[in-house]
Image 1 (cartoon, one colour):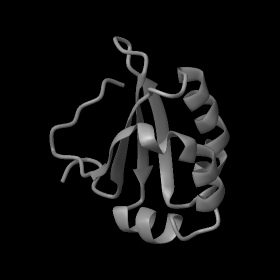
Image 2 (cartoon, helix red, strand yellow):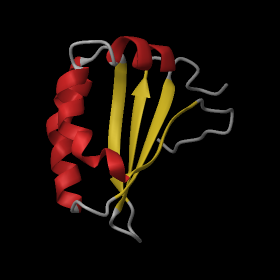
Image 3 (cartoon, one colour):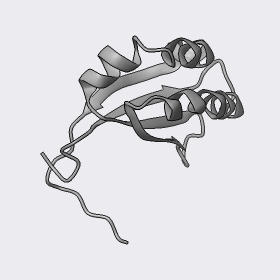
Length: 108
């Protein structure tokens, strides 16, 4: 495990076919309050592909995969979060948890 031993990284890849980019961005602007309120969530970012604007990657840092699945998804913040992002579920290409490796570097 790498520098981020104490958290799990969830990647959700969207390929928008039914919705516009602005729809997804606005949905996550609204849903983000529920991520921020959940103690299991350590951070998140939504990125839009520069070459293909219909592709987005949502990166969420969870305290652990177990905390995400067993606490967040069963907690009070999940139902309102899900209600906001559910219209986009059919446009998800990948939704998985990853563990970092020792290969990590950032310029500060």
